[in-house]
Length: 460
Image (cartoon, rainbow, N blue to C red):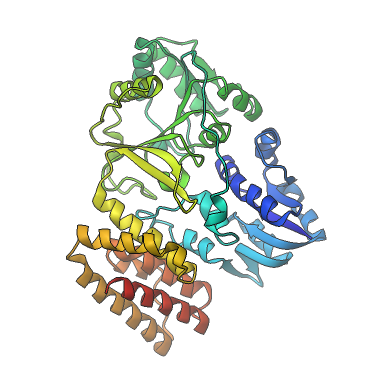
């Protein structure tokens, strides 16, 4: 019997799945197949856990086996259909069978409920990959090395990202590189192979006065991984090479700009840094403003001063409008972003409440999470004492809406979860998806009511 993970998404998604691969290998001691894009996994074999990769072009080969545990982390139509044809004792993720799609696994469902609704989420994708098939206390046994870069002053600046809104401007990179040069460092512009990123890197380097300080699209993934290991520090937006660097033990500073949420996709290993805007809308799924407000506080000379202090181990300068975190692990073994400066406590209280509410509730009220759950509840209502009455009223409204749908056979609109206040949307979105995912079955309604009962108890 084998295990199978389907991860046919982008480069960063594959690397963020490495902890799942390692956990399954350690926990089950079975051969692990991984369906993935060959162009990504082929050149990362030295970084990847020891698994048997199957290229997506040969996915039909997987039908020759049955599986103990099958996890589909992809949302592609072809992989969902494939999952529906395979035999497995345990299945998590998206599956299409008889032209009907369904998500299996409480945490896979939670992840899907975050679409356009992730403002209060404090669960990393890598952890969400694992929580349906393991307990977080098993993650506590993982040992992480502290990254150690070279001391030659070389700093990699990766200019690319999957979307324009997620990367700094050319002028930012140019001025940032100039400031680093003034401090005696050797900035090197790096990018992927596409023409747009290559032009950004070359233009920024020319403006910075270091036209030869560019490695523009000339490195394969394998060569890039080897090159990164020679740097003193790697600085980048949210992008695949960021995950390669952090898993390769290269000191990394993530400039978290645009519609990205560092709690979900920042460097997963501990001891790295994340710099993000402190504006209230930061960490969105998709920008809805006329301009990206989260860019304004990213001032090149201030960030260069911060980098200089980080490298020298000096007291860190505060940067107005920005929050600096270090990546870490909580006492539960889960991903944590520890604020160094700039975090707004009231937002942290709201997000932590939902993190521990779901950990407690989706684990069957496991007492392991009770102390953190009670603490987060206390901090939420001490920071927002007037919110309790509103939440009590809305909780009752949600209960009535489920009862009404059951009696009238009228399914709410897909955007009905947005009718609730933003602070309640983590719950309204999850419950609506839970019901829709199982066609408003009796079992799904019961699960929804149990969640709402837990929420009601938290308000007492």
